[in-house]
Length: 619
Image (cartoon, rainbow, N blue to C red):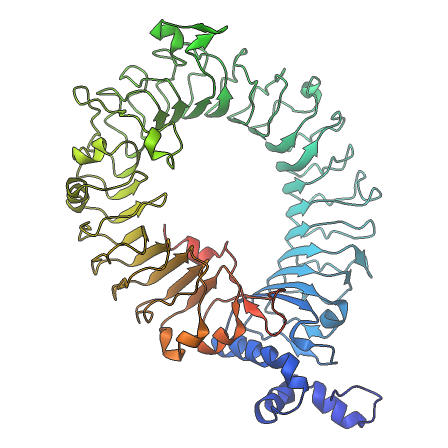
């Protein structure tokens, strides 16, 4: 039975029924009412939010969500500061009251009316096409993200950061946006005068295919094109000389006839026909080029560069279908062509042999990728962050070449503290890794005992065995290790993990053997690639951050004691039975709820993959 206004039930009982606090009591003591069957998750949801004092809540509940079709009012608990409401019907939103504690709101709604968004809100992401009032967005908003901008919407002058993916033609006019905006993201071609004179950072998120006939204000210092397919022959009227940063991250085919003279950062990615045939601005500090198709000679690059990244994507061994024998003609980088002021350098080329006369001596961050050799002395003595990779994709280990010759072996200087290796195993077996390395990432399989002993002797604090590497059971980890990431398979023995580990990431490639988890771990991330359910051992009491990514829990095999009472933040990247809510410890600080459209009987838990508290844990 249901209780609705003007039905056979009196007015007083209807008012009692819609009271959110009395509803909680009714659900607890009168479970036989059939209304509870479809709204059982509502009582669990609300109790979890309040009892745990959750601050970040994401509700992606289909239709009317936990409110059902009944006329119940639900006031979001005041502990919530970040809230996401998606897939709700208009009826459901009309029965939801947002507290003044909400400062960040992500809202998807067919209709928006004045007063729904609390005045405490500072950041708003809105997806709607119809508004009932022009001033429905409060003046407290400073960050605004609009999927679509209706013509009658008034954007308050408090907005500093604005993103608009689409808008009515009547809204794409000069003077529509306030002059308070500093950062502007656009998903369409703006009309001339649409961009305010206050904008400093401008980003185009959609294709610009037609001729550009609008002018960028002189206040803009940073411009980025995500998709650009428009001719820029008249670019001198479009990009002014006051620009400091220019980024074109698209497969732009035309040559650039004009580079603003004031540029300090230039980023061209995915530009297959880009050719260095003109002087760069003299004040340029950062240059990022990909798919460069010609040689870089001495004097081509500006002499004040501090950061340089070049990806050569052409075969210099043949020119006009003729095999080039001269090593000088095959080399895309001439000796002395890289300015000596560069501190951060990244080079990728198939046939480049790195010698000591190519890389500047003052480089501190260095990334090299090639099929050629790394000659002795090619790595400067001041490098602290070093990445050495084969040009081939690291998943194709059978194609790897011996890039370090025995007689002319490259030596890693003792200044290196962060090291990424994607080379052959010979490099590791010869124990060429210096004792100064504390952060190590390996993308090459480890097989031999000699290799594993080499790792155990290093004073590592962070170790990542990436790309599906299966560590052997004999692998001995350094005793100082605090961060560890590795893979396990069904035919592998469990590894002995030191009790110093605080951050642990395990990827199970199949149904795995028992893997003990040290009591020192506070951050645990588990991935499971098999579709069958599996259950870990009880979570250690030390765990505070629990991250289940692509991991299915069989609730019939776990109890409330499975989860540690010390867990404060929990994340599920896949859909999980809502009954798991009843097993979670209290209080939690972070959790997000999402509906599983494939399961009709219950809602499910979902933790956003961009959950900041987890991302920062591994730093």
